[in-house]
Each structure stands twice: as C-alpha cells, then as structure tokens.
Length: 272
Picture 1 (cartoon, one colour):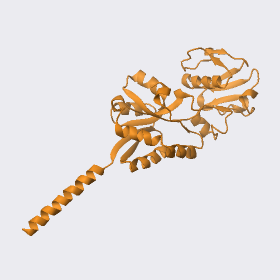
Picture 2 (picture 1 turned 120 degrees about the horizontal axis):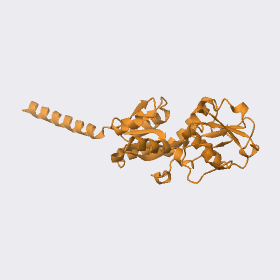
Picture 3 (picture 1 turned 90 degrees about the horizontal axis):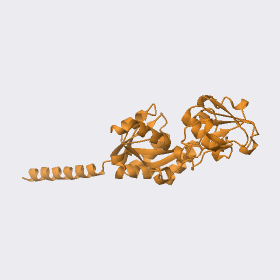
Picture 4 (picture 1 turned 90 degrees about the vertical axis):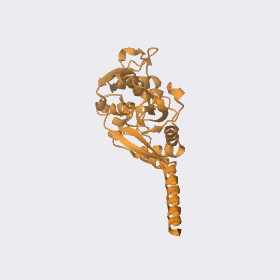
C-alpha cells in the first residue's frame, strides 16, 4: 500500500512540474526579413527570450516573398520594408496586412567629391540620380528638402524631372542606374546614393554625405508588419515594444555606425 501511495505521490509531483513547465514555455514568433544580416534581430531575440518570447528569424532573398508569406500565415510578422514600399505592395497585391511599429530609417544621402555643403553646389551644376521611378522620387524629395528644387504640389513620390517646378540654380540631372551613382562622383557636382549602395561603396551615409534624410522622411521609415487580424496581438505588440526599447536603439546606433537610424514614431505620423 505504501508503494502505491508513493507512486501516486510521484505521479502527482510530475504532473505539477509538467504543468508549470508548460505554463512557462516561450511563445514562438516567426519574423521574416530580407537578406542574410540578422544582427539586429538576433539582439532583439535575446531580449525577447527574457520576456518569454522565442523568435525564429526567417530569411528571404527578395522583397516580395516576405509579404506573401505573411499574408499566407507562414510567418507571424515581417520587418524589412519602408512604409512607402509596403503601401504600394499591399495595394497592388490586395493583401490584408498592417504595420504595428516603426523601426529604422536607412538614410539616402547626397554625396560630393567637389563640394563641402549643399550651398556650395554652383549654378548649372550637375546632380546624378537613379533613373528608377521610386528611387528618383525619393532623391527628388531629398533635393527639395535640401532647398535645391521645388516639386509640384501633391507630388506622389514617383520620380520624373518634369515634376520639378522650381530649379533656382538651373541644375542639370544625370539619370543613371542606381548602382552606378557612386562611380560618377568624379564627373558630377553631387550624386544621390541609396543607403545600401553607399555603404557597399565604403561611405557612411551620416558622416560622408553633404546632406541626408532624417526621421522626417516618413515614407521611408521601416516597419514591422503583421496580418491585420493580428494587429492587437499581445505577443506581437510586446515584441514591437522590445524592438523600440532604448537598449535596442543604442545597439542599432553602435552596430550600424549611423547607417541605420532608430526611428520610433507613432504610426499616425506615417499615415496609419
């Protein structure tokens, strides 16, 4: 009888331990990114684990699959795109996705080997910019912010030089493939270079550009997106909160050396 009682006691203890372990188990979240660099999300994952959230980073090789995979429920969230790209993509593909938090901005910059400031660019100077519509649009907005040109009212972000309504310095524009924008620097007064291309060319968008985007370039802030039905999910919003912590901001600044700027703003500021 004592053996039976002891056995039952051990079984009861085992069940209690099992139940406690089950209650403490981490909630798993799959986050999709584009590219192979997981440095920031590795750091976020470590902090999330302390909060009982196990993050699985799912890498994609393009800018299409992360949104399609999210829409199909293959991942729980993604973090790879600007709000401008996101809005255009979900409209084109009729996807029911939504942003739940902002992350960083990877600033586009204006670079020059001939001039130290925007003001130094001379009358009739030449500016190189990417000829692809979205890249050109972003570059033109940066030139407007720098005070070099003025664009038509209601500019939609799709670039075309005929949308410039004021050009007080009579600047000329050399339209080239985005990847060539660093190479023409010796031949132009300044060149607009995308963040990733600038970094690959050995430039720091913050230190080496004569002008660059900041947190006010709201269409180009990156986001964390989820399915719309999950926008209030407690775990996903906790993960977003962890990303937007001071620790993560400091890590991004140190790790990226200014190439990515932590930009934690309310979704209302980016039109969501």
